[in-house]
Structure formats: C-alpha cells, structure tokens
Amino acid sequence: MAETKKIAVIAGDGIGPEVVAEAEKIIKRTEEVFGYSFTTEHALFGGIAIDEKGTPLPEETLSVCKSADAVLLGAVGGPKWDNNSKELRPETGLLGIRKELGLFSNLRPAVIFDCLKDASTLKPEVLEGTDLMVVRELTGGIYFGEKFRREGAGGEEAVDTCVYNTAEIERIVHQAFEIAQKRRKKLASVDKANVLETSRLWRETVNRIAPEYPDVELEHVLVDNCAMQLLRRPSSFDVIVTENMFGDILSDEAAMLTGSIGMLASASMGEGAFGLYEPVHGSAPDIAGQGLANPIATILSVALMYRLTFGYEDAADAIERAVAEVLDAGHRTADIAVDKSKALSTTEMGDLIAAAI
Ligand code: ATP
Ligand code: MG
Image (cartoon, rainbow, N blue to C red; front, side, top):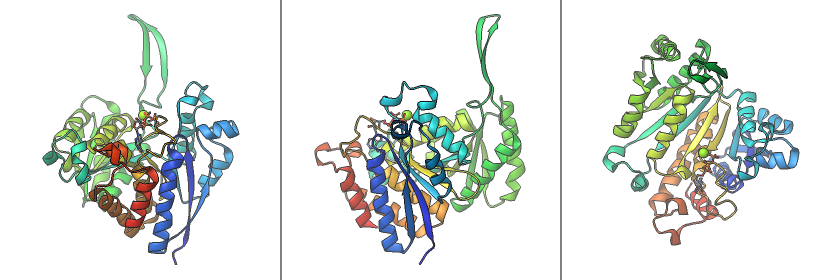
C-alpha cells in the first residue's frame, strides 16, 4: 500500500465545483486501480470565501493548503465580485495564495488530441505531434516592478519597470531544464535579449546553467520569433521557458493551438514537489450550474499532479490514455462537440473517463 497523500481541494466558483467533482471521481478511481491512497480536504477560496468568510483567502484555507502535498483548484471569480474593492476580489486571493505557497512558475502543457485537430485553426499537418510545455516565471518582471505616473515634456507619463534578479532566473531555469530532462530533452529559452537588459541577464544565466544539463538541447529564441514559430512549427518545441509577461502571452497562444480551453491543465510550482493544479479556463459563469462544463482540463490537471508532485507516472499515463480513448470513441461535451444535440453532460464525461481507467 502506498503512503497516504493529502490533497487540498478548492472547488471555487462558477463551474469550479462541477469540474472538481469529476476530478475527485478520477482520484478515487486511481486509488482503486493502482492502490494509491489519498485524503482530500475541502477549503473555501475566491468568491464563495468572500461571501461566507469576508475574505478571498481565509487563514484556514491557507493552513489546509500548507499542510497538504498538493492543491487541486477549480476556478475562482465571476461578475458578482468584479466591482469589489481590491481586498475583496477573488483575483487578489490568487496572487496571495501563490505568494504564501511560494509558487514561482506556471506550467502549461499543450497537447494535440488527434480527434480534435479540426478544432484548431492550424492545418493538421502543422499540428501533427505537437506536445509542448510552457514554463512561465510568475513572481517577477514588469507585472511586479515599480509603477508610477509623472509629468514629462510630452504631458503625463506612465512608467512600468521590469526587474529580474539572478536568483529568480536561476530557480526557474533549473526547473525548466529538469522538466526537459524528463521529456524530450529540448529547451527553448525565450527572451528579447537584443533590446532588454533583463533579457540579457536571463540569457547569460541560462547559458551559465546549461552545462549542468548536457543531455538537454538548448536554443535561445527571441519572443517575437517564438510567437511566429509556435504557429509555424509547434511540434518542434518541447519545453519553453520564459519570463512573466512573455509567458503570459505565449502560454495563451500555445493553448489555442489545441483548440479548446476546456481541455487544458496547468500547474503552479515552487521549490520541490508541492504544486497547485488547476484548469487553464476560468469560472465560466455563462454556463455554471447547467452541467455543460467540460471536466477534461481539471481531470488532466490531476494527471499533471500525479506526475509532478507524486511521481505516479502509471496513474498519470492511465488518466491521459483514458481521456484520449473516450474522445477517440466520439464522446464530446458541448464545447468540443460538432453535433451539440449529442453532447454529454459534465458528469457523463467524468463517468466515462473514470470507467476507461
Ligand atoms: P477568467 O477571467 O477567469 O479567465 P474568462 O471569462 O476570461 O474567465 P472563462 O471563464 O475561461 O474565461 O470562459 C471563457 C469562455 O470559455 C466562456 O464562454 C466559457 O463558457 C467557456 N469555457 C471555459 N471553460 C469551459 C469548460 N470547462 N467547458 C466548456 N466551456 C468552457
Ligand atoms: Mg480570462
């Protein structure tokens, strides 16, 4: 019997509780099939926590997360809280939880499922074999640098500063190399070293670290070129590592290669194996509570958790295979269905995938 692992479960808002319920079915199923053992503890976060506890990130939620081996998150936010003051916004909770849990990288795999190729705007032959991972730095760069306004010769000026230090770059670059070693051993480091000083430090740091990973093939790609190459030769990428803003933009671009936002998983990691796993999509208030949500992104987030936090490769593979099998058999939720009248509900899709494991 495997050691019992603890998963903090944060269902959140909108479709969050619906998709998380399906992911929990998958967790139970892998316990039965593979003999793994998990305890799950539910905690309030986001809009629902604002309503019930007066804060998006209650202390008890944080302590549940800190005592867990991994966190599974549904989605947070919605129109109900959009006009709240900053402290009472779900998004403030997200920044807070990342900071409190020391999560400095966001990992987004983009994988093409053969049967969904027609959902992408790219030609099937260009997409063929695409299986990449964007590793985005989460804590530094222009989003967190000093911001201010001042009077200038041309009227009011706005200033955003972009700051990175060597330690911040090193920790994420090491992580990206390690991820590449477990995949196809190719790393593309993306920067704008021809014009930005932060990018020059980024590139120097990558080059200094690279000899520690002689088995990984490294290329430096300028961000504008990378945006182009993602559409031209997506299958040639394995792991892409980049700073915060470039990663924000490129990870959305890479996501759309795969066709549907309802299919994409993500992980936020710090030092070590602890991680927070969530679907890339938001709380989708337009379809919440109707059983329409595609649970696959959240189910694939469980696979990512098994792989990155627990090292349960067999169960991770089984989840991914089950998803592919169910899709290959023609089963679809409404977001990916051609014939919407035959679309499955959230729970029907979850049941089929669980049964296929
Ligand atoms: P956020 O600000 O949290 O990113 P958003 O409004 O930008 O939220 P989503 O909540 O992801 O984006 O929704 C974007 C669109 O995609 C909506 O029309 C939503 O219904 C749809 N969508 C998102 N997730 C799913 C899903 N799991 N299944 C089906 N449709 C989804
Ligand atoms: Mg959005």
